Image (cartoon, rainbow, N blue to C red; front, side, top):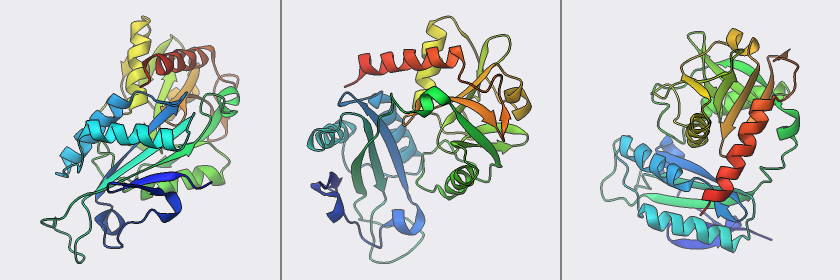
Length: 285
């Protein structure tokens, strides 16, 4: 059965969801997106995602066509209409479609807003038990990675390289240090039990799941250092993992074919995943 999408004020079958070929998201990647997880039919950590959406559109002077409260209503309506129990809600807002193609911001054009859902069993994903391998690639992206832009070609190439190598993710490297994954934040657990993840800045996207995991770890008196780390540090670590809305907390067991520790998900990663899932269920809306 065709799922339901939202396009500029209307709920329509996904197969009928369309935007103009002149839409600036299509022509210039002039847009912002967000992905929120759904568990037990409810949105996970959605306030954090909407806050990041507001920040990102503000950074590129793009006005939202609807209030954040209305956007959450649309998200919930899509979850209901699609009977979504576990999965993701994708949202994209672009500067809209003008009468032609011009680089400068058009005047008097209403932004485009689209949303759709996809089903995914995040909690019971097989990779949660086995862990994933990652490969390393050069970070060739622009310098404003803190903006959740729809301009994702560098990430597409990184994720494709990972897929061709049989890996679950690509870690991007700049100046000898890990920035982040193609669609995730990167963590390691050092031999002296310190969780390390890169500090927020223009070099990385401020991950919502990353933010929650850091806070949950600190609440439990775990030591957290927000700094860059090298692949050599990661390979010498006790554990490594990624965080994202689409995977929650996911163990990394190898890098470029080299095992981390015994090549299996570690106890801390497994525990943080349990803690995050519990947090997600208790705070879902």
